[in-house]
View 1 (cartoon, rainbow, N blue to C red):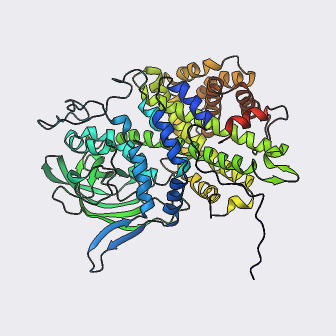
View 2: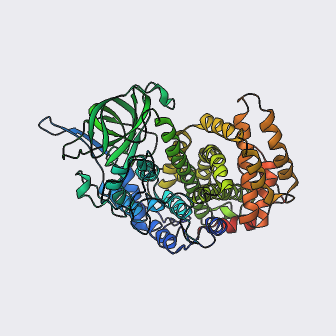
View 3: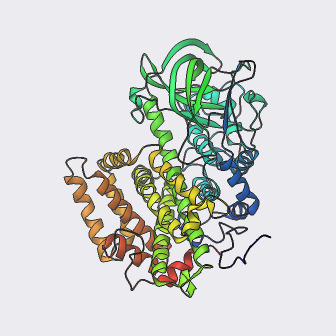
Length: 579
């Protein structure tokens, strides 16, 4: 006879709720950065992302990891990765929401102007949807980068792994303008909202995705050390054609339809368009050696590849690959900050959901004073990350404005460095709120373990902490940068004495920094100052005060849950609740 017992004091899973409607910090940050933005689509997406059905797809896509099929049973090369059907459902949702290309899609088709990119004219008679210059030509209330950023954050709460090809498609599409012929052919598929996973020529596909291949085993972030060679092989309708021989150590999402890669020419490191299927319908010589066995990011296939005379087309000028990579890196770094912010929000929501239902020592966990301190502290961190990430997205929308262009240069490394650095610590503390239930992989609470494994990725990818801190230092040393930062912080002048002191000291610290040894400390302090100034304008006064008192005044310990006793815990926690 089976012996069992009644199950009680276990929380109901956080499911079938609207991720957007219940996220007050996100909605307030949107009102600040894009006050005329229509959020109807975000509300619909939030409902879908919070559904039990989509949560099941996220779980299955991670449990059933991608599988590489390098050859068929007869020994012929396949170089294909097989995904679980749930992966394709998630991709369909992300692309249907426009998270890959909405900012680049003009509402009115038109010819690609001559003189754009390298100056190659558009093919005669071709009319394509082309991206408008950032910050130009858009009507009042249209903030496509902010809209897309909010959707990206919401989707990350459900499942971040599938967003790798989404993010890369977003980053590389505008770079294709440097080859007008390729852009004319590919832009409609890259900005449309149809997902097509079939391996077939681009002409017959309803939608297209793109990836990137930059790093090699001997260089990593030092892409100048790349050894992949590009040899001229004539020209055709897509311009100068080359054959590539070499490898890529990290080649993420190898099932994308095409990739932008770096290779050495006689003029130096150059950027190339590398399709998986060639114009004649044959498979390009991209040999997938193996898939990476990663800590997290399980639903996404990251690979190592060899190029055995693979055909590729030049994008931009020979020897100008580094500047193009930096432009694309700016966009993927935005997504790293957005993604970590979304993961923070989901971890916090899971912690709040659990503690508001679980009892210990005679009362709900959320009513225990010390737990309230932890939850409020996490809520402050999450809201500050959301505010900074969306502020960066706003700079992308308004890049025609001189101040916003400078802020994009400054805020990109700041947001990537600080938000992503805080992620792993945040996830560990949120997991602890669930106790042992947070550490297991099964069921609804298994999401917390998945978040914990995912957190380090965004900090490492697209430039780890040292690279971001050095990028900030270089940006701050430009003539107009410090003045732009002072202007950004001026909105909070007089609101908190500690913030005033920090803001006043920053220009001198930049001027007197003779070496890079303190660049991380500077990045931290600039991030905190900007976050505080934003919270003053987007959050209730108790949130701003507690953030400044803890992060800037120093009335804080070295772990979460060390806010001062006088903090308004009730207001902070109530604002963060996911229900």
